[in-house]
Length: 225
Image: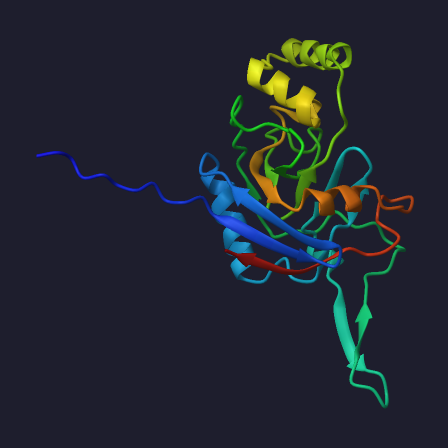
C-alpha cells in the first residue's frame, strides 16, 4: 500500500498594519524559537501601537520596543477624537523588551540579510557574547545595492570570520541588495512577501539624532494570517 501523502504545513504569516502602509511577513520554520515567539507576541497584541523607532537609510527599519508605545488619551473637550500621545524624544528608544532573550538560530546559507529579510535585534557582543536575540525587537532589511567589487570585499571580510557567501547569496545580494555584513551574527527568521514599497518609504524618512523618524511610524495592528 502506498504511503499517505502528508501536506506540509504552510509557513506562518504576519500582517503588520502601519501608519505608512501594510507589510506582510512570512516566518521561517527553520527558526522555530524566533517564529513561535513572534507569533505569540502578535497574538497577544504586544506590537500593536509600537513604533518603528530606529530607521537608517539604506540599511534597515527597527521596531518592537515596548517603551515606544503610542497611547490614545481622552478626547478633547467637545470632540469625539482621542489624542495620540507619543513617547517623548528626550530619551532614546531601543532598550525595552520582555524579561528574556532568545538563543540565536543562525541558518546560513538559507537565511541571510538580503533586502526584505526580517531579523532579530540584539545587544552588542561586548555585553552579549552569546549573540542572543532580543525577546521582541526586530528589524527589516533594506540595505544597499552592490557591485561585484564592493560585494567581493564583503565576501572576503565574511570569509575571514569563517562565514561563506555561497553562489546563491552572492547572486541575491547583487540582484536585490542587502546587508551581508550582518550574516552569521544576527538571526534572520523571516522575509517580507508584500509591502517592500512601504519599507522603502520608511527607511528614507528624515530622522532625528537618535535615528527616530521625525514623523512617527506606528504599527497599528499585527495580525497572524
